[in-house]
Image (cartoon, rainbow, N blue to C red; front, side):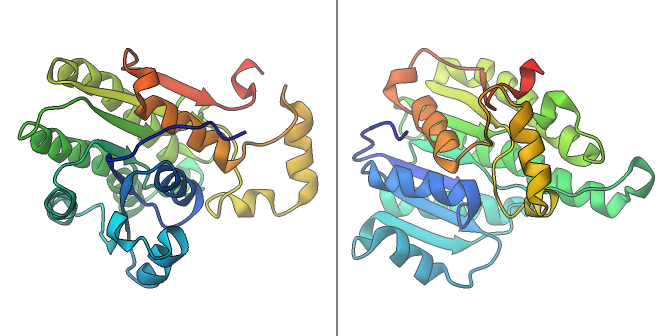
Length: 255
């Protein structure tokens, strides 16, 4: 169920916002009146993406290609958004990749790719966001996308598990550091949510059904379940909430 929030006049940055959960988060912020800026690795289809989300209201949306593992590109993107809309009020660190391999198959290249995408990008996007905030210090929020993998340690997902555990640590550490400056920092930890990142794991409907049968709420998450949590943590309704990891997982962590 969608919850109504009003972000009129706010500017929101969503990394990795071209598809999946990030795309739905971007759509929901736009529907709630926000200016939104989306970056993804490829610029292909960015104009189409903007039209699909914003229609003719292209003055409230910015879409561009950014390699979030490149700190210089990431900082330039945030600077461009701040110049375009005057300031950035909310940062959603959503960009991420997932790989599946045994401990014996992990390579240095794979380690670097996952940790740079899922963890380094969170650190340096948040750093630049905080620096820009000092120019115009009003209440602001960072919402990071974590995962139940940060605490359940799913097998054959060591790199992703490590990265998301790191996201939780960044969230709590930055909440303490940035709170005095008026920036709240929280994270949402989705449970199993249908996206292209995990589609192969559930290609067999029987596998998905077996998981749903185990979950207390009897289903996998919908993208709107995750978006609802993100919008709540970014909203004034959560203005006394910081340093928290909100797991949206249908009871998985009770198993």
